[in-house]
Image (tube, rainbow, N blue to C red; front, side, top):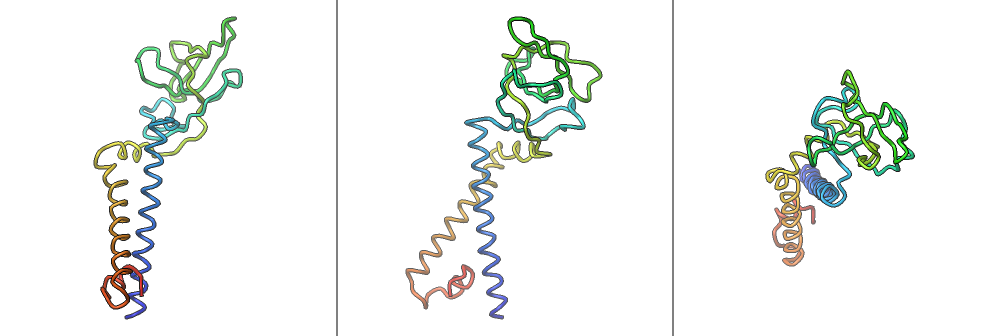
Length: 184
């Protein structure tokens, strides 16, 4: 029975540690999206099969002179203010006042109807995280924030309070709690 208690105690301790790590990662993702916005959630199927709906992509800044045909780039939508399009470069032409970039979604039959200037390029897609957009979208909702960030920190706080209390009460107090937390 003692070994079962020990296994349960260690399992609980590891679960708390995993929740803490999960909460820290979730916080990092929230802060990174708010401050740097390196992650973008893809909505639409124009880049199938390379990038799918609800994938997340990491966009890194790119010098337009370093872009090549075949690169996947993010650029400002010329028709919808505030929207970003992620398509592949299929053509580039120097207009004398800068590059004119022709783009196309991998699943589209033809190129985009509007060329993009180099100033419209936000960056280059460097990493695709399959289906990660689902988690990021959930994390941005109040229930997602509560489940992924607030709850793990509350569990950590409860664990630390219980640990502090048991240390304060000495070796004889709270034997059941000591078994659960792992203090013997």
